[in-house]
Length: 172
Image (cartoon, rainbow, N blue to C red; front, side):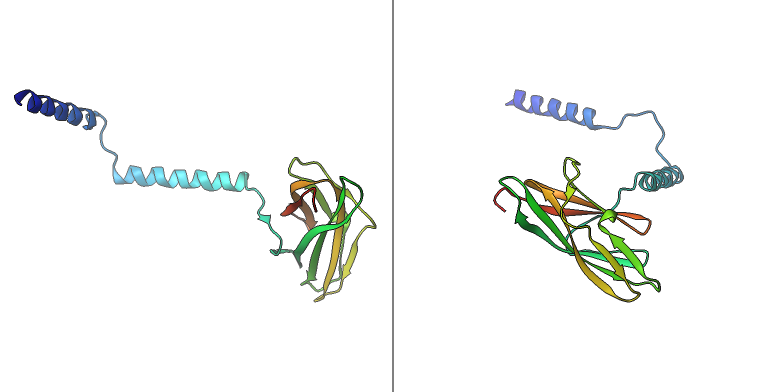
């Protein structure tokens, strides 16, 4: 029984020695801690500004850029071209909040899959001319095989906007 207590006491002593702070460095003062925290916050903010990735929008999100508000209302397969290719249709509403007439066309948009393979526009090019205070509904169509998801890039005014859109399966 004495050996058990002796072994337990030695184990406790070793544990205390291992966990104790026996460093010879002086403890950090509050002032130094505040300076370190302030410099790390500035570094984080600078990194966010430099590498700020654009916000990703989803179906139903309103995106305002300049005088325009664009909403992708829904997406889906419009028709089947052949056994593997489908027409992927993106319906959207564009509202002109400005005081001048604005034009948008399908050339302002690019559709890619998640592997960044650009999809070919299908059908006639879409063009919208929107009077001040008015809205227009339209659709973009692209030819695509099955994909898990798509990325729609739009240049609205001078801003690049990116949407993540649901994909299509081979059964759609």
